[in-house]
Image (tube, rainbow, N blue to C red; front, side, top):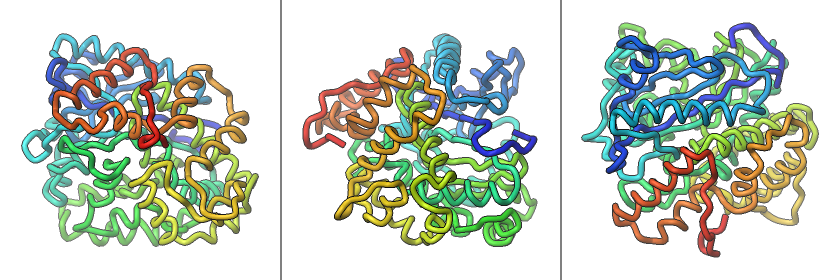
Length: 420
């Protein structure tokens, strides 16, 4: 998205998947071999696959599939991503591997299994590792879906950024898919985000409070967010390798080089139809906020970062069961006499907002499971059923790999203790 486009006129979706051994599900650091096979040349970091593209990430066991330029609609992208998953798995079959979904590997030991990407841009990854130590779950064991939304000019930027920052706190309520790390239930439905939020403690301005500060113009953003971050990292980065917008690790970051805002708090789901259904609900809700359908721009700006960050911390732990303040729910046109579960807000938003988008039938089944039943995290817990032996965990994640292969949501019998 290089040329500035108006609000909600284009979309960019990126989905990260882990590469695992086909038999053992151990992480398999062969992303470079996959990209080399797809490109037909060694050392490839990005591969043009038509409507989509493939690229590397920080670690060598992650493959990213992404829109190859701005898409005019979210409709149709689920099938496109599913087709590319099939192509990647065909290459991986020859390497003894397959793609595995969700936002984190449940059994990975990052301290001993992390392999950084060794080719193009490796100097940037080495700089990150030297400064922040990337051999932890928050760097080496996390996969997410990013949504890129365009804006044109300061007014559109301010409205979109404000809408995103007030919706961010409840995104994990719907997107959580990472309850297990190190072979045990972490106590967090979105353990990926719990770990991610601690990534940049050495340079706190890089992450902030995860929820972005209230800024409504490009210059204000540069002055209040980017400049302090660049200043604080400089003593640790004398070569200036990280003096770029990508250094910003907040849950949503402005990319002024492409006139977009990138949302980064959404765990990868079990299949592309679920990822795109999730993206559609999020985009529809943001569109409603920007259009002031339920609350005014001024009412949205009135929420300070600290209060929003407190809600985010709760949804990272409890997902859809999180009780949010009634005054927060009112931002989305949901009125209740007391605090209300975040899942209720999402159910209302899906009913009231999705009709505003081009609906893709590919979303229907996954959306019903996600919104009406539970987040993927609770479905994973139900499938494991308190049996955290490695064999049981692998069996559940093999099912998830099969969901990815067939582009179908994970169905489990949700008992009351696990229900969203």
